[in-house]
Image (cartoon, rainbow, N blue to C red):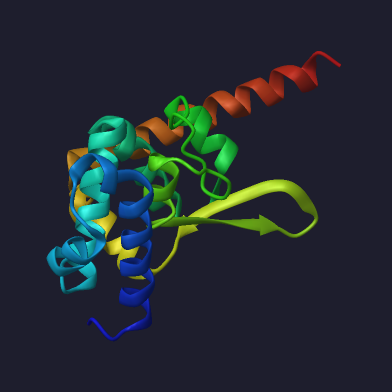
Length: 170
């Protein structure tokens, strides 16, 4: 696992994150931090997701990442931010803060052809998707997955009604 490109990328992001946001407060030197890092990809993702929970709260983290999971990467960043009430500056492409850096370890934005302002959000790798599913227990029969689907349906239904209402007013 430690020689895979995904592990190397994720662990490099972890070191950079530690140096930028945590080294001064925790006192752990980068070499010490590296020595304590998990030795496999799932454990690294688990650590990132635990950090996201701590930074924004489990409910907001579940709503954001669960929506990416349930929509299979079919939602725009703007929609995800509306749905969650924002992530306290936690954008996917341009954030330079703790939440944004944590999210960029799990999800990425991709431009939509012909729509320069639209950014669809998906997982960086299927192992990130699997980690979100495991972390939030998003199995087919789970109450959390039903809750995420219900919230998505309510949000998208509201958007549909808004659109139909504005068309009818023309």
